[in-house]
Length: 173
Length: 78
Image 1 (cartoon, each protein chain N blue to C red):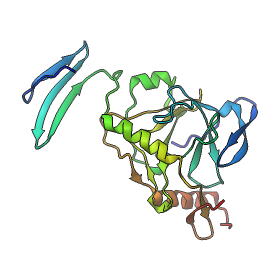
Image 2: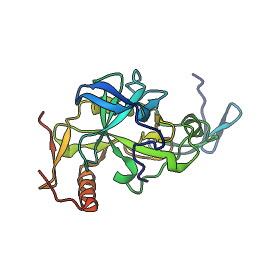
Image 3: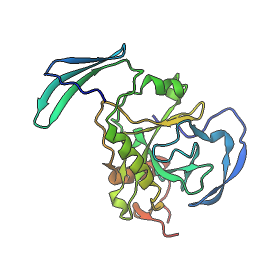
Image 4: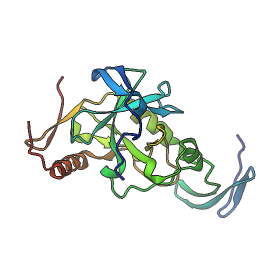
């Protein structure tokens, strides 16, 4: 499922935010994601936006709109792990206002050490986004045994190569 | 905390909708079966703590960029 982080049908509403990693960034206020419960461990921040460092890079950055230093690397979960399957609790489906799977966009938080080949993805707690409303939650999954730290470096490199092939672009430095 | 002992296949009822059954014992592990409506959030406690700590660790990530000429991932030295 490859939904992009864009909600169609409305004009851009530009606003500037401060970020520690990227400096001052202009974002579209319509694309702000609202986490009604914040993120586990980082509950102070409720509003986030998704930033792309460069085209074709599968690693996206979930940047707090209000706290410049809160920025987490994430990856499209289903693109990274095509056989990833989980059930959502009814309470989360209701809170997110999800009425169609087409509105669903799921991200996994990455832990990237200084030795980046050791990067891992948290499949046990997906970030679940309703693209239509911008509501989001990071849901700790019950029952299913998904890893908290799935080694993901190899898969990220594959995704980047797949994207290059699909784009048909010449590689550039 | 309410403390109960159960033998295998015995059940505890919680509220109107939740039933917990001891399904088996293997060494130091027990297997629990939980019958509850999908509206009830049930998860292993350690997963929440593990998610908190991975989220906090995620903040320390270096920016990762790709050297497309060699399809290599590199930490960005900004």
